[in-house]
Length: 128
Image 1 (cartoon, rainbow, N blue to C red):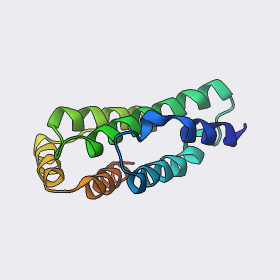
Image 2 (cartoon, helix red, strand yellow; image 1 turned 135 degrees about the vertical axis):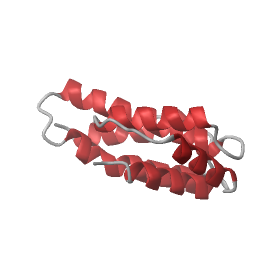
Image 3 (cartoon, one colour; image 1 turned 120 degrees about the vertical axis):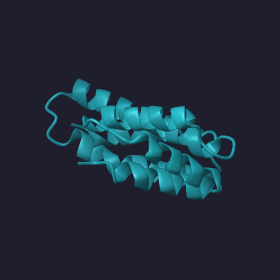
Image 4 (tube, rainbow, N blue to C red; image 1 turned 45 degrees about the vertical axis):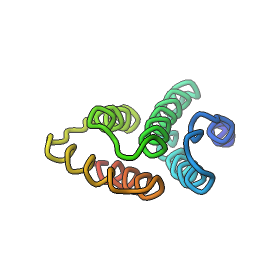
């Protein structure tokens, strides 16, 4: 499987980072690139690997929107983000309402970079 094909796909898709300043866009791209191997390793079919990368890109778009939008993030955006992440990892994600509120409150006090770092770490912490 040609990993570079997937790397190029991420790097060439502008709407993954279009709401972020350059340093934050670089951070999100590095996070996405770091996830490629875990998603495609052991996948025998290039079409399935492509589907997995598409799901990664959906997560990245949601992060781009959440961190690059207006200050703060709404609960429904967090639900959508976590749902997309669960689809990407193939794991069921269950979060209590109090956690959604807590994350939304914390992110509302952060600048774009802090929000992006916090949200990516929050998602990474949800992996089983």
